[in-house]
Image (cartoon, rainbow, N blue to C red; front, side):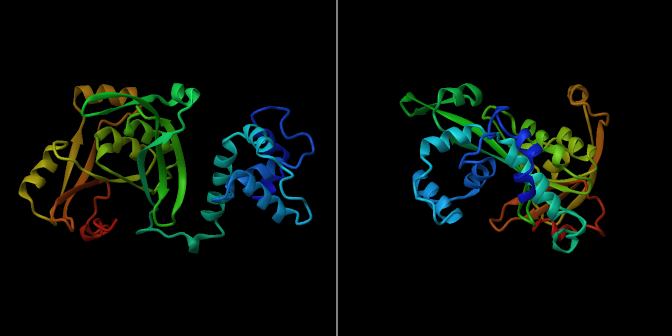
Length: 297
């Protein structure tokens, strides 16, 4: 990480203005990044004083003002943090010199995709980009609105590493946002997803990159899965072929997917609440992937 923070080419790629960070100031490119990464519960001015006191004990606290920090932070592009995660954290952890530290399940990375709605500051520029959500109560709409965004992460659940993260307008569909993560999916990954992603198109998208999927299945999604729900028996496993109909074939072509069918293994298991859950996976072989293990996965 030190090498990248001191690299002139890295700086040039991740600043918002061509002339940013060229003068010799206290808030250098590297220090601004480290300050963003430095978490704390103190006020901004307190964090600045603490940071510089630790960096240079002889320096007077408060030498850098909150206003100067705001101006310097605006010159730093968010892409710097994406690059640091990919080039310094992930490349090192998954690199050839660190195989014994990487936890896997039956040879696979277990990686989950999920999204969550979050409130953003109510600024006009953010509202124009991410969209406003009007609030309402029993009496009807209120004169209050919020900026809402949909955050989504592709996450290695065994090694607790974020592989890819997105922040998009709240109106973005989960599967549409999930597809943006597929560039971070590697062959051999098992992509875990919840019921909102369950569809033939999603399965084919994941498989197109050489990965496998494990997905919770909602009711009224696939006829074979509905039969398992109706039987209400845990421990059932069957393999079916899912094939696109006319409307689905057109959607697959628009998505650039050549395949129109795939084989899927459906599994039923009992949750601690007593509810029956059905899972769909492309891991078809019972001997290699025993059904009892999928509940924990």
